[in-house]
Length: 262
Image: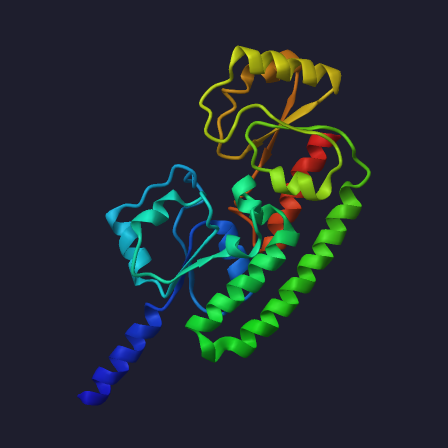
């Protein structure tokens, strides 16, 4: 009977041993390094900017071996959590996450974030250290290759990117030399008449042909701009909801940006 009890404890520990990441892009990064169970707290169909903890999601957080987050002001709900190991990836990239929280869209920043993540993982799973370090080295190489590939692909464009909200801030800053304009801020519910007038002037002056909008966002706020400037709407999935890997997500974002610049 004692043997069965010991086996049950071991099996239970294995089944419930997992790290938890706040958003899907961090899952795509973490799975390149950590070979174990990784779970995502915020569903890709939810808005991470407005997410609130529920009793059930709090239980998931409490049961995790470690919670991996962007940090900064991105996960406001972190203030309600205690007694859980937390790995803040923004600790490795200075003020970038304060400027704009969508830091996972810059593969150069992700290199530093990945190194930080691996350090956090080693503290929780020291027995996996060798495998995780090898995985990290392979991932860093893939990131470098993908960065060069995107540079080469987008270097021919110098047009202006118009986006509904500032999700692509870090991606545009890394890969494009043209102007970057957003219709509204991340939390603005509407477009003021003054801002509308300014956007219309820019659209016509820079001959902008498309506007980029996040996949699950409504076009309603931008409709006056879309109609007046006759813009094509290009959807982008910044959370990599259907992506099989981190580089796959970057490819999809690159496709959207290139489509908007054509």
